[in-house]
Length: 219
Image (tube, rainbow, N blue to C red; front, side, top):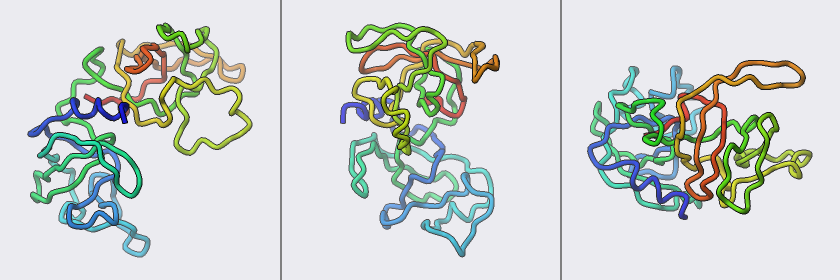
C-alpha cells in the first residue's frame, strides 16, 4: 500500500489532467473501462470492450479533466490503485481515474526534484548510487532489471534480475534527479547513443540511470 501513498500528494482538487490509458470508469458503471477519445482514432464497435461515454464521441483532442477529489487508495476488480473522481471539461461527465495513468496538462518537463518518473523500460537501467545495504552497486554498462514488468514471465532471465526492494510492478513513481543526458551504451556489440535520466527510489533511496521517455514523466 505504501508505494501508492505518494499519489495522494501528487494531485489535488482543481488540477487539470489528461489520462494516458483507458484505466478509467464512469461512476455509474465500473464493470467496464471507459473508452476516451484521447486514446483512440477509430472506434471499432464490433470489437468494443469499453463503455461509450460523451467524451468517447467528442472526436477531438480533450480539453482535459478536472480533479474533483483527493486521490484515495481503493480496490477495483481486485486491483489496488490510487483513484480520484474527475470531471470532463468538455462534457461534465464524472469519471473514476486510476491516477497512476494521469498527467497534469501544465506539467513542466525535465525538472529535477519536482517531477516523478514511471520506469517502463529497465533493459539498460544501472544503479549509480546506493544508500540501501540491500542494494548491490552495479557498474555503468552492466544491465540490471530494477522492476519486474507486468507481463514479465521469461524464466530464462529470472536469476539475473536485481529488483529494487519493495517494488513489484512498474507503476511506482520514482523522483527525477537530473536533467536528461546522452550516454553511449553497448547493445550486442553495437555502440549507440541513448537519452538517459537519473531517478531516485522513494523507498530504498537508490539512484538509477534509466532510459528517458517524456511520456513517462509525472508532476
